[in-house]
Amino acid sequence: MMQSPTTASNPVPRLQQLLDLLDRQAEVHGLAVPQIVYIEKLRVLPLGTFGRTLADFLEQNNLKPFTTGPRRKQLHDGIHVITGYGTDFIGEAEVQAFLLGTKFQLINLMLGLALLRIIYKNQPQQLNWDRLWQAYQRGYHSHLDPDTWQPELLWHLPLADVQALCGLANRQN
Image (cartoon, one colour):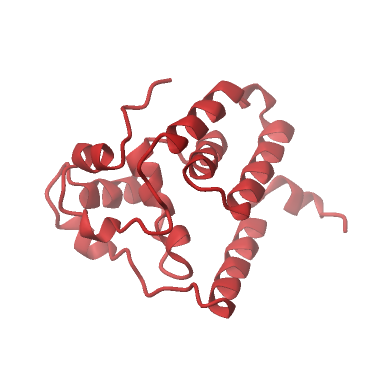
């Protein structure tokens, strides 16, 4: 099916459709979990804690936390925070590469390929295979299992401590 020019140049509506599909599939397969991230609780934590850093990250990027669906979806922005990857297309692709490195999931491969297509079509100069490979390797060598990770038990810890617990060295570009 052909995309309309508006849809092709603006991937946000398609992203929302994908997120809605992910929620429906999570419900069908019993993978949906109750809300994990409560932004109002994170905002009152001390500066420098993982939870407060997540709240600040969401505010700085004008984002709302994912509050429905599977754990992996709801904790997506926490992955951005512990890895330091941005919210632009290449940063999102780095997150998917990192997650593929931690534990292969078809959804991460599909999202990563979709992001690569968007980057290639709209910003080919931004495509940086070394950064994506480094993100994959970083995930592979981390101690993070995104399916069992419980950041809600770590909100109160300094971000550097959470990164150390996950085996994440400081990000280098």
